Length: 123
Image (cartoon, rainbow, N blue to C red):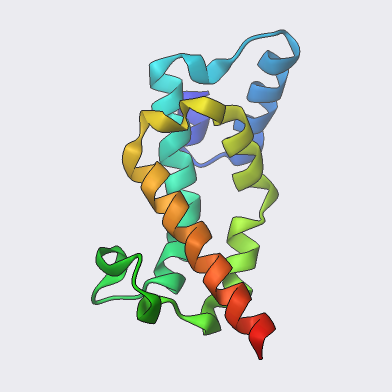
């Protein structure tokens, strides 16, 4: 599983996770697997974070209103609502706290997405 995640073979990794889940195994309970799942989610979230919080400041101003780019909304939906990200997060579950940077990044991306949606609906 760790090899599939490191090689970015998301379908194979998800197949293994589903197989183990059906057998009653919570794969993310293992520290190495939880860290690999967190790394995979971070890779998949990188485009959304870059679209929401572009350089030069990036995530340094993650909670600043002016940093959110409403034009990033179309790409953002593809990343945040992707089945792969959702499935990996579902398998990660409460073990998301294994990587506090990822937890923070995910919260900031979700906050940015909500800001974009609010601005889009306000028009």
